[in-house]
Image (cartoon, rainbow, N blue to C red; front, side, top):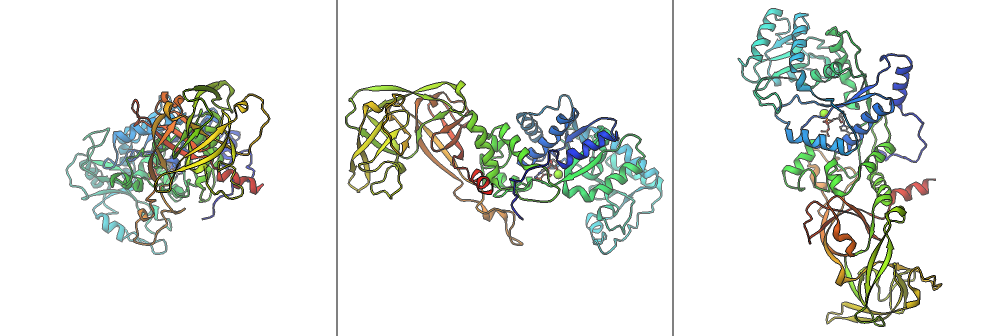
Length: 565
Ligand code: ATP
Ligand code: MG
């Protein structure tokens, strides 16, 4: 799949908005715009769902309409209250509100049952005794017509009686199904007498043991939209072929009110990311990640824990837009969006992850001074913080080279750099341990070059640093992509997508950070200067703070965009 070029100018209205605008102009919906976000509570929401949430709630907002939250809970064996709760939390966190419009397909089980009875009475549905295997074996292929069920012309009265008895629990699972009587020769396989109800002696997370027959998703979905007065039923492309079936249901049920208009858009695919809930569940169940909200997961809860903000995900959804054809979005765009937002809101701190001891030989022994630093240059209102500075400091080991190449603007023997918010220093001496490893470096500072003093002395490089004695030692979790290939689901027949997992997706280490960070609360974002964006993790406890790296500072997408200009 081609990676999308998102640098092109977008038309002012996307194709969904054009349809909605036209419908309002033509008054086909009585001036209403009513959408819904319809998750199945069988897993946690992922970034693809975030896209759908922004789309559905966003359209409603834009056209002064409403958006419902509806749980498509028709499969009791896979659905759980835990998922319902997480979905609500995630939608709210993204910044959307369904007011009192929280609905469940299971709220309509009685109505759906009545609708089914209506179809049987019309001679448009029948009780079938074929097993699931037989049904599938007789369905044919798109080019070969299917075979009609021997039970297709069962008398209406008999079907009604059996359907009632199915409901009352007289039969074992698999004994009967209710099927629509449509067309076994239709080129659209979905119209070949689809199953509407199956017997399942299963406990439902909301209706308990009230039902032992459950509607199929296809039977429930369109009618649920209808019952809620949905005007625009937006779904992903794979449902395009289901549309004639949904229309057949609404038409054959003779439903008098406005029929929802189904519009399909391309689902979001992201490079280096797996988006199927079933596959994500397998990672959780097999312990390959630490739960649905592992910061490496593309789930909304994982991204939140990773340090993504609601605004960054909304920005991403906006930039991705809506497409009518399958495409693949580079994950760099998502990373770009979070950098954009965090750049505006994240307080800066200095932290050293891989320290090298630096001694300023001409600095007074027991002196400690507090140097002012801007908390966020993008947000003057954030104010300033004070950073302790003393004779012994840590700098990043990478920022020193004993034999540097030509354009190395950091520290080296004889070189001069600025310590951020502090002074210019010069390196005079390199000390090594018995293994020949550099153990510390000795520098002198130029007192007259204190930041803000107006001194003219210039150097090429500026380094971050900490004063170890006053610093806070924290745990940092350096996350990398969960998969090593751009399309991890693209594996040979019979192979498991998990062969593409990145064995180095998490590296745990330590950092020494300036004291300002000591008050961090879980969920608070920071920029570790010159390094990346980090967020305080919920595993943090007093005196043992944990930070997740959200993303490094380097923005490959912004660079791509620049070169495309
Ligand atoms: P998955 O395939 O990941 O298991 P799903 O489609 O089965 O997802 P649902 O709970 O049925 O998950 O999805 C709820 C809504 O979110 C649907 O309207 C669906 O179209 C939309 N959605 C799911 N995945 C994506 C995606 N990758 N991009 C855009 N919308 C999506
Ligand atoms: Mg689905």
